[in-house]
Amino acid sequence: MISPTVPVLPQAISLTAESVIAGEERLSILLVNYNGMRYLGPCLESIRLHAPPGTQVILVDNASTDGSLEAARASFPWLEIVRSDQNLGFAGGNNLAGRSARGRFILLLNTDTLLLEPIAAIVDWLETHVSYGALSINMLDGDRISRACTGRFPSAARLAVLRSMLISPEQYGAEEAYDVDWVQGSFLLTRTDVWHVLNGLDERFFMYGEDIDFCKRMQEAGFGCAYLPRWKYVHWGGFASSRFPELVCSFAIYVEKHMKGIHRLLCRGVLFAGCLLRAAMYRTRGVIQGREFDRIEATNCWRAFKVIVQRLE
Image (cartoon, rainbow, N blue to C red):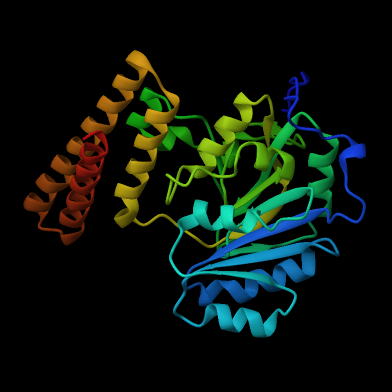
């Protein structure tokens, strides 16, 4: 449930009606595309159907080669397109798009998503709850089943069992909104003033973790983070085990950035030990059962361990 207490807003951020520029657009949607031919068209069509009239939609293309950018340009002429000659990742792409945002609110939206209903009321909620800086809504998978898209900030115990950082949607009740530590970046609505004061996403996070870091910095600035389960969207994306090294790298960056002293050392140790133990477990099982899957998993865990070592060199 949302907290009844209202944080003190940083003086650098003005959220009063007087600060709104005449004629300023209300919402800017930021999209980052990288070879997203399969999903980009349906995503943009759902935006056309469900975004408020006059919404600015900015698409940054991270040097795609599959023709998805050209198809989007032809089918959706209202898109504002920014083309990058290299893959900037999720954080870099959104930061590039954010420089052109004119709306008072910014929605980070993955290109492999579908809006299922009008989102004006979601923007209304954030506009009227001024103590909150960001929110997300109920994330459904391709089978229309709710999946975890909120969580708790990393700690040594949670890094030992990564799933413990996630909050299962079954844990939420019938309230309109809930306080959470962080929300997933596939649908992250924030205030443009907050976005600029925080300098957007930290580009050290190429993949994974930038949303957790953003929410951490936002809450340190005095803003709450909310989850609204009533509204829903579809996110087709999933986690591939081949990306485990990138996930561990992101947590290593987070630990170095936000933790100090004994807590930092403990979290480092948990990441080290976790990768080594997982690699040993999968390697042993692969030898015993002869499964290629286990050998691949062992390799991914070993790669993750080496990533952490390289970051500390």
